[in-house]
Length: 256
Image (tube, rainbow, N blue to C red; front, side, top):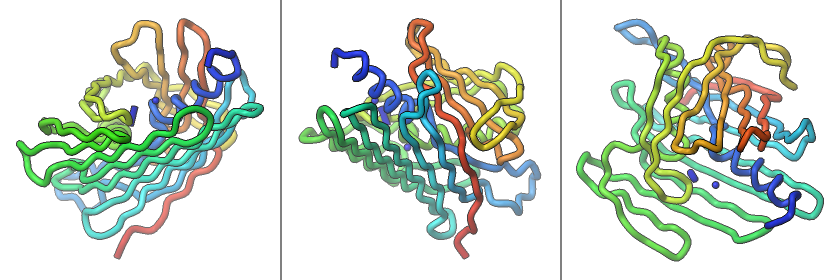
């Protein structure tokens, strides 16, 4: 709930870091298919991933969804990747509401440290429709009219809900980790078994559609794990830039 050196080694590390951020890494949900709903829309969870490039393990990422109170949730993402003397640490935190089966962003924070410039972003969403999004991007502050955009994480949390309902094409407007308005589409390609550190599992294969002809991102969601994202692979000009694979997954208890 955001947006992510001239040596080959540097490009490798940066590509993996951006993969962890830009593609999602971060999602789990369970949809209630009954009109009279008794099952919560979201299931709190913790997921751990390994990050690879050309099968070389460069680091890890962890995503956690926690219910703070009735209808109020916290979603956190943290990653650490390194290659030789280069390093990259990232952290994202979303606070949001669930109302009438909709995810409503409240606050989003992003930070990045390591080799190269550090970065911090804070996004405050308005309490009512028609308000302004307040953005603090390092030393710059500005506002944007809120037109229903999600934050850099929440569209990835909503996707499993809609996949569970059988939807094949999705579209999301959101504010990325750079404070920019963006749109991504998701298109279901089919189903297949994926081999992960977690083990072999049946998954729905999805292509993330964006305004970039040189980049292609593929994602796999496992119905047996509440449609959790279990793998994400990114290419640029046909060359693999990063591969995120699930290592461990567990659900946690909801708030009383």
